[in-house]
Length: 348
Image (cartoon, rainbow, N blue to C red):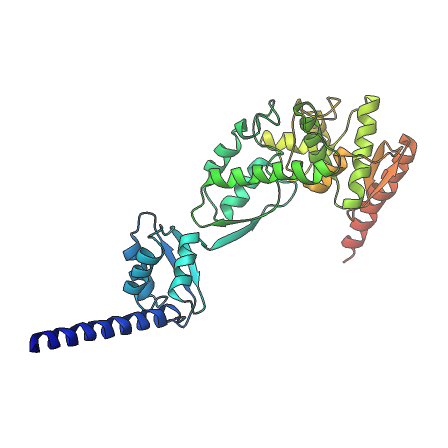
């Protein structure tokens, strides 16, 4: 009888202890914790075990109890994998919230903006200089046209198809993945803004569209002028007039390693298919990555009578329908403008 009584007391103590443990666990799982003063950046390497990850988080003050978090991960969540990467913790979180962050892979990302009008090489250099990868490896990936073979079977590289945009990548994202994202963004614009404007995808027309858009991108600084400039080039193409586009010559000089920031009269005679002073029609490929505004302008050039245009040196242009009118504009906005400007600067 005495043994039975002591057994009952023991069982009751176990039950009470178990209930207390459950109460404690529930309380701790619902309690946000931040045992640190400054935000914590924690890098989780691929292959790190869940136990090691949680112990590291406890050591850094993100978790109050790694063992409790481990029990919750295994017996409540079913032991899903925790993703590698760089994580930022800057406010108190409960253990389930910390685990959700690791399970979802909510890693820190870093933004990089690729502006319109960059060539493949300039894009590779910009990404490398911003710390997103190796310049030579970027060039290798950007020289691989298979990513757009369905869109442009004639493409020899990704010139024109790396869409300029602001991207966010996690630390350690590979060069191939970054290039894939830029091509995917270009495809999204084809299926989005360009499709909405009436573009029907066709390998026969896409290449010409991107080539023209790339020239417009380099010529135009103002969005409102892009359709007009596209209209000028469309008129020249229709009439069989050479494009006489300086940016195509500059692109040829860059490919030859001869571009020093200035275009000279002898440069207009270089023997390159990209020299639109010597070879009429569009050049054989894009000369940079155009943005949406230039792509839309090339898709729908303005119906204008102009054949010529010249810069006002403030980003805008003056347009003309006759050579005589154009020559007068050149005299006013180039020859006289620079003569007077140099005279003013010489007096300072």
